[in-house]
Image (tube, one colour):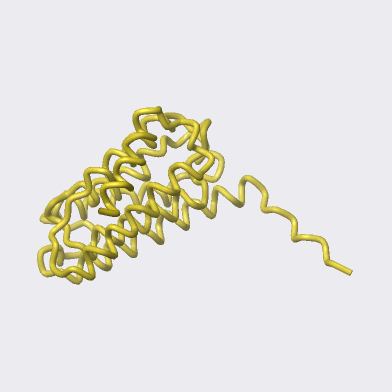
Length: 184
C-alpha cells in the first residue's frame, strides 16, 4: 500500500523558501566571482566593490527583509536583475556567467516567477534578451561549452515554467533562434 504524499507546504512556507533560494544563489555567484582577483574586494559594505558585486550584495540584503507575504508583490526583476547583469556583462568570465545562468535556471525551474507576478512579462523578456545576448570572457573551450549549455537550460526553463505565457511571440522566436544558433 502506498503512503499518501506529504502535504504541500503552505504558501507562506514556500515564499520563505524563495528568500532562502535567492540568498543561496547570490552567495554562490559571489563566491565564484571572488575567486577572480578582479572581483576580490573587501567585506559586505566595501564602497570599492564593482557594480556587479554591489548589485548581488544589495539583492542578498533585500531578500532577507522580504516577508513571506510580501514575496507575491515583489517584481521578479528585483531578484533576477543582478543575475541578469552578470550574464550581460562582458567583464564577467565564463565561471561567473555560468554561475549566474545556473542561478537563473534554478529560480525559473522552481517557478519562483509566476504568470501573475507584477511585471512578469518584463522579467521574462529581460531573461530572454540577456541570455540571447550573453557575453563573457572566454578562457577555454570547455568553459565556453558549459556556459552555452547553461544558457540553453535557462531558455528551456523560460518556455517550460509557469511564467511562459508572459513571453511574447517575439521572445519565443528569440529563444528558438538562439537555440538554433547555439547548436551550430
